[in-house]
Image (cartoon, rainbow, N blue to C red; front, side, top):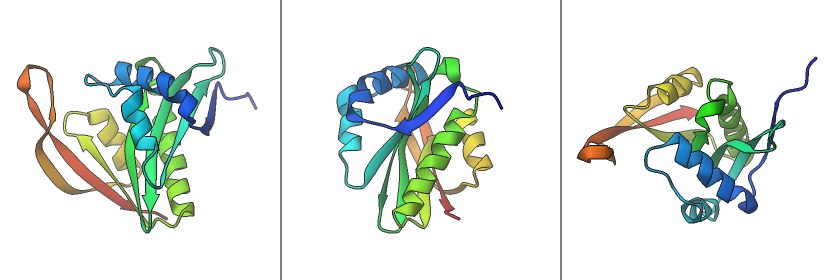
Length: 155
């Protein structure tokens, strides 16, 4: 069996500069290294990264947290050049498994109404809409986009 071109590992603080770079390519309104560090420092927070074995570069990551019976995806990003290879699916499964191992029974996340690719992924993973936040995300030109709050029971 051929070796995977990618490697999944625990996200470290030393990875956050690369993670911020990936985020800046994946999203219009990027978060910097300091913002990602603030998330990683939250109580119950953890993360995973995907490294491209050929380039040795971080190409995707997820930050999540688990408190009591609830887990939450804080953010997930995949470099556009690495999208469509199942990396987000792998990261989501890892975050869900870690949350469950820490006692979570449910997982929550939010996604922008205009992020159709992420919505397809979350539906595939079994997430359902819980509520909406009208005009939550701000886009270029002052456009506001709703956020969908999604959840699933962890199996």
